[in-house]
Every structure is written in C-alpha cells, then in structure tokens.
Image (cartoon, rainbow, N blue to C red; front, side):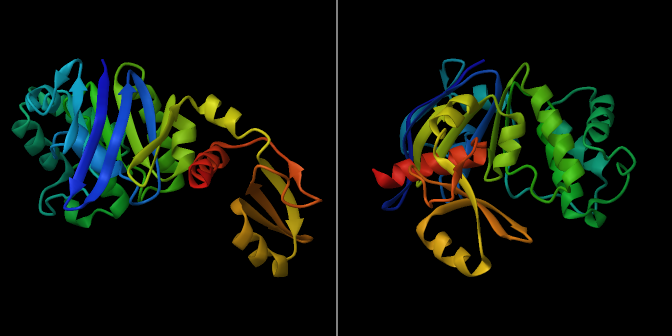
Length: 288
C-alpha cells in the first residue's frame, strides 16, 4: 500500500495553501506536523478527494485519485477536524446509518467492536446530543474505522480527549499502523512522538522535511540547552530565543531553548525531544 503526493499544490484565489509537496507514505503511522495554517488540513482534503489539486497529483497504489476518485474513496477512512453528528440518533444508530451509506455489510458486530475500541461500549444507546465533545470525537474515530480502511486519515483526532483517552487512542493508532497507512495530522507533537514511524513537517504550505523521528532528533543534537533564569529575566529570553519548555522551581524558571550556539554562559546542552527537533526544523527554515 502506497500513497504518493507528487508536486501537489492547492491555490485559493491568489493565495497558495499548499505548494510543491512531494511525499510518499507506506504502511505505518505518519505524523503530519505543523502549526495552524501550515496546510495540513488542505493536504488531507486533497488526499481524500474532498478537494481537487490546482497542480500535481495524488496516487493511491499507482492510481491517480483525481481521475479515479473511487479508488481512494473505497480505501480511505477519514476523520476531519470538524466532525458533525446527528444529535437525535444514538451512537449505534449513527454508526449503523453510516455503515449502510458506505455499503458495509454485517455491520452490527463491527459496530459493537468499534464502540468497545473507543471506550463507548456502555454509551452506544445514548443519544449523541448528550455526548461531551470528547465522546463525540470518539464516535468520529469509530466511523472512520467502519470499513476497516487500508488508508486512515485523521485530522487533530485527540482534540477534546482527556489524558487517559489520548493514551488509549495513541495505542489504537499504533496497532492500526501495522498493516495500513495511517496519516495523523496534528499540532500536538507528543501524539506524533508516541505513535509515528515517519514525520513530515509542513510550514506555510511547504514541506520542510520528511524523515524518521530518529533522524530529526539527530539533526537537533547539540542545539538544545537548559538553564535556570529568574522570573524577571524570562521575558527577555523569550524575545531572543525559541523556548520549547519551561518548568517553575524554587530557584527560578528552568527553561529549554533551541539554539545553534550556547544562549547563555550557564546553559547546558541536553538531549533533544521531538518537540525540540520540530522547532529546530522550523527555525532552520526561517534562517534560510
């Protein structure tokens, strides 16, 4: 199973939301990282055929999905960032309705399994209008898996989930990525760090890097520093450096900074996290 974007671009009026993106994804979980407005959602809508590209192509197992959208639509499960439900239906009724539309046969057992998978087994007969935002998000995850897709595309899937649910969903994604392509779009680096076998970073509609997490960490080696500053010094450091983390302690604020050279005499080099590596990639691009 292979998903290929070749010189992919999308323009709205005079503005390019995405341009010159070349990516190849195979089985596993691919983390698509970038801030809001980076082009992640546009990329996912192009891949899932909700949008047609302005330039370039998307191919699924060699088939151009603009010419043959059915090839993609039969293979993909999609959870968009904004997922709507019918409030008067129960979760089970809603999933049954979507299964019928999509031609999923013998769906009852599949729906029971999916409700258990997303920790809604006891809430399947409750109306969706009474669900919390996190519960509705879990229904969205279940609907994306209804047809047991070969390609799973999820856009900010852990928004609204509590920490326990987020860990559970990360584990589900990791398991699913063993025999299919999973594209996880998020700005939450810890979600990618916990699940992804590959990471692609988008920024301002451009692809900055696509590599293994270990390779990104190696690029940031020697460019991450920690030291303690007072509260009064913190603002000045924030204005002059990229801070990836702060921890308040009795002696002051321990800060973590991404910088090519030592930012202060007392700063000590530390091992980078994927969050540091992501900020390092973005910073490299800004310096070009």
